[in-house]
Image 1 (cartoon, rainbow, N blue to C red):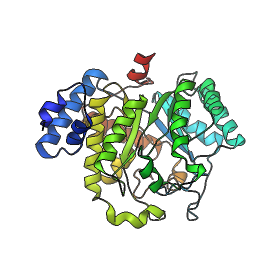
Image 2 (cartoon, rainbow, N blue to C red; image 1 turned 45 degrees about the horizontal axis):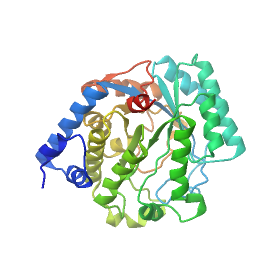
Image 3 (cartoon, helix red, strand yellow; image 1 turned 180 degrees about the vertical axis):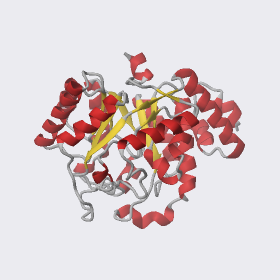
Length: 359
């Protein structure tokens, strides 16, 4: 069997190679992290790109079994930030030179929702003199809707698959037409055809998940040729059906370390994509996002959601930064990123090099 030292110096990786790297611990893990950091710096540079995150609504039509804002959770206080509040958060991002924003919400496909997002995208472009990059994370939509939003100015889209194994997918989603694995995969194809930089991701450390599942997640990313990835440790939420299986979970720190391994391995597998340091990492380790930056991540998402709404956008428990205003969040992140040995790419969209090379 090959050693970690041998594997990390390869250009191509078999499923068995990926499995060895994902299970790396101790000195092997240090070798993996050091190589991932070196690859990141040589291919994408030392810059970290900000995406100002605006979670503008927690109203959702889906009933995903792991999610705190699932439709059937009656304990959630539902909200819709006003257009003015959303645009004010985006103006803050523009004035503070973030370069990009992410509009994220629960999944809705209504005509009014589609029109609203379309209008917001156009207004964000207008208020920023076309300077702010726009990522959307608004779930599955029709091909026509994706194209409409793209033509209005959005250019990146994050649609997480959460599990690329269809059997596992249906253990964490209801097996209904509304929660179709095939439809999820098809939506990723629609996004590519519309012209977006396409992002997806998975939860790491789920109940029922095996190391083979994670290996196949990585191979799925490679197969569909993603441009960016957002993935993090699974963190349970007591008001969800999946919570009953919490006895199957690894300890949170084990999930955290596994998530860092996933980020590092993905950086080796797809050297020129964008990889986000997920907020869920910080829910386990206060320096979680900065640690992700040192092992391969190059995107971070300061939360610009108005503070009054943040505690209601709880996809999982122990979500950090619920009471920090946008300015405090930015200052805190700036200091942390410098400590992690990186610099911030101000006024830059930080587009995926993988996407640009494909063009």
